[in-house]
Each structure stands twice: as structure tokens, then as C-alpha cells.
Amino acid sequence: MEAIGKKTWIIAEGYIPSYGHGPEPQFTSHETACILNTSDREAHIKITIFYTDKDPVGPYEVTIPPQRTKHLRFNELKEPEPIPKDTDYASVIESDIPVVIQHTRLDSRQAENSLLTTIAYSE
Image (cartoon, rainbow, N blue to C red; front, side, top):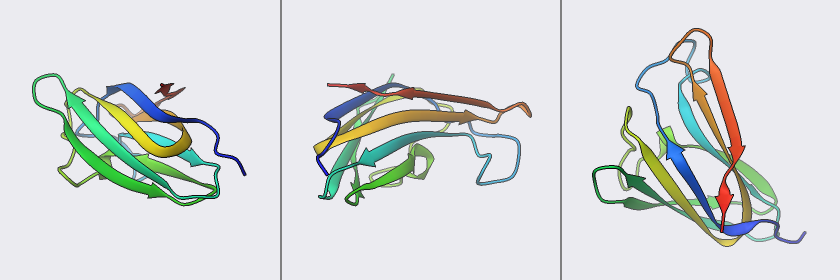
């Protein structure tokens, strides 16, 4: 199948609360990049995180197998360093082949959970 999407994606808004309600890991508050690779090649992804008051961090590197999707929780990114909780950030996601990225947030700080999802901005 042909590669569908773009090579550069931006999620201008990010925030991971330090606490939540409900069983873990299902109800852990999180930010997720849902990445779809429709091509017949691996997608090599590099993520750079931007902050309000410090230099960018990255790249975080992820590989998405051919014709697969990955729901990548930003909470689980560890190298080069974990993304701090209770901190505003933004991300630029670059791929060597076109992919599609959707952004999702689960905010479980209250018993009435909130889920937000939107397509990321592409270049």
C-alpha cells in the first residue's frame, strides 16, 4: 500500500498531570500520539519536545512497522529523558516516510474523566 500522510507533524499543546483517578494503566492521565503507517516500509520517527522555560529535548526515537499503528504514550518516553509531569510542552514529530498522527489526551484528575482527541497539525 502507498504511504499516506505527511512527514512532519506538530502537537502544539501537551501536559501530563501528575495524578489521576481509576485503575492503572488504563486510567493514568496521559498524552498519546496515535501514529498510522500505511506503507510497506518501517517508519522511523523522531520526536523533539519543546518547553516554555528550557531548551528542547530530543530526539526520542520510535519505529512503526509497515502497515501498523502505534499508540505512543508520551508518559512512556524515557530516552533521552522522561517528560516531566505538570509541565506545559509541545512536540514536533518527524518521520522518514509519510504517516498520519492523531493526538489524544486522557485527563483523569477528576472521577469524571475527560478525553480529548484531534488530528495533529502537519507540514
